[in-house]
View 1 (cartoon, rainbow, N blue to C red):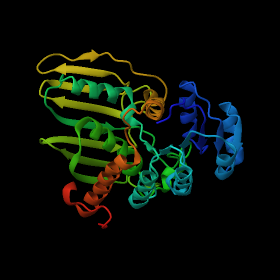
View 2: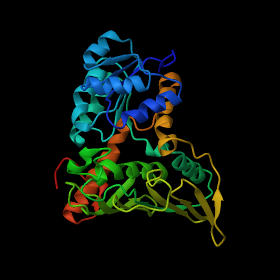
View 3: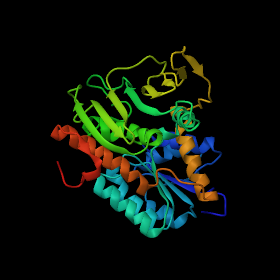
Length: 350
């Protein structure tokens, strides 16, 4: 916790998603003092776009020259370990993009390192910070749904068809050995945990529909929670859904309880249907920007934690549960079995 305002932050990584982080910092009234990327020209271009005054190709040099309070790491898993390690050992709090770590073991090691140094390390898992999921949580906590018994999400972003799938935005998606679950469904593992509590068992069947990609791009995952509650993730990246922009919500959701059903549509509207009554729109502040401002909301959350000590969501140690559930999903598919999390060893292989 800092007694001083968090004003001197730096961004490491100038790839596709970094623009959303920089825009979010701008929305919070903050301009990073530096940006770093091994591709200096790419860093210069992004820095110029967002008025970042200093640009570096070497993070060690940046850490020596700049008086920093927070590092925002926007790198793919294969580039994270040395950067996260150096930042933690410098005693600086950090946000790290997901997927977090090249595998569970590396993620656990980075989380343990942050814990040993007493340094805040937050995984940039932002879907739980979308306005619609926050409103769903408020709805649950207010008791409007009664006893919540199930949640289901139908993912249909429509960006994964044909030989050009993902090449215009994130071309490395085509070569990821694990795609749908590791890159996308993990958002819903986290969001389901946020809404429903801890996952106690999973059953999964994964598929590859687009032959040009390496990993899976479709799947059905059944989640079990305490109190005999259930979750269903039904996703594929090939088809779209009814929405002006299928990437706004990425799909549609139904949250069901004894008192009725709360439905999320593709335009980020929430619809409330009390039991045996008609459905009507439930108004709420939908936010603005990518994913309703979820990136901004996560970054604000971290700043508030550092400045006033508010509770922190998705710190690296807590985030490990998402990755254990993720491994259980892959294990269920590989073995054709229901995986009980109580006796599942994610590092044992399957």
